[in-house]
Length: 387
Image (cartoon, rainbow, N blue to C red; front, side):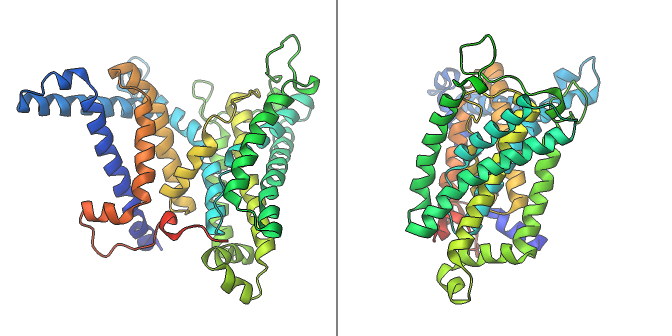
């Protein structure tokens, strides 16, 4: 199994490397110091490599380890950027799993953003509205978040199963509705913070907040452990359970699955409900572990980044975890890169877009790196999304 996983990981890894190379070229060619040396080839190349190297070094220091932070506080404190990366990766892992589960079922869930929003709403409401003992409060808030998000995701599943409506169109529209809904609900009395007129919910109570993993100096919390545990459960579900087999069977060939006696409609609805619940769990741990209060932009771009994470992770839970940490590192490190070497943080978006582009064209990547006998049709993009 490990050998097969490594073989399937070759093309995503090469796609990421190629994206970094092209991203580095973009960084260099948009730098005035590099352009000023264009008439001197050797100096031009030297300045280009130096600029790109410094940019990626700053990216690493902002995402993994910064020796300047360790000065006077000890070696371990230098890993503070890594704790921020893991914090950002936690909801991204869960959203990536949400999209991956839908992929495995032959569905393209673009609606993780909206499902994340509904999970955030549910967790926030239980978190600030009710008084409960620590532990129980977290469980109830998370459960309500997953319920709301699962129902929201299930709408697309029902429409797909009963009317044949394409899940891509439906989930995109549901994202718009969710974005407007959170704006509306934050204007209602039940969600309005006393003494404020802007759309901001009351902060969740201490009893509903996820505990920190390494003390108050580091923001990474129990949400990361939850995300890893859920990734393991999703792997077992897809590969060791009857329902998980049905998901994969419908995703591989819906007609054959129907012939074998599997209800494609029920499986489609179940997959979208589970997918929505996972994205909602991501929203819950974001609110209960980091954000603490509901705002109109609580979801950020987690739901959309999850699509790229699921693609890079090849729909495999282990791959999704690694891809989510990688993308979180790009997001967190990009801020430091901009501050230290004045490289626009938008370059991270360029790299992410290039990753998607190259994953969608594995033949091109194989040709560039001269990879022989790669698994054609291995990527989710090349397979397409049926249903």
